[in-house]
Length: 87
Image (cartoon, rainbow, N blue to C red; front, side, top):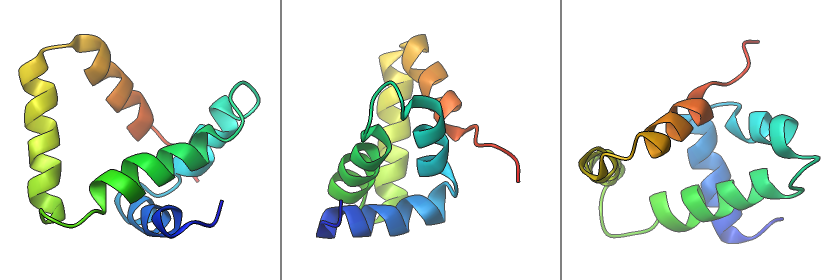
């Protein structure tokens, strides 16, 4: 995958959460091929990296929305994505 949104997303993902794409690929790559690239392209490249709000404001709005939803499953899944293998 070499789209413009993927490249922007990869740069942002590597800055915010180094190793996340590799961790997703290792954990889910056999079950869902292409998931890691899709997350980087959509979540980081098409959503977090788009114009309009600066990254800090967009990040705070996302956290506020997830907190307000009160859905514990969402919060657990976000924590699991942050857990990347130690080098």
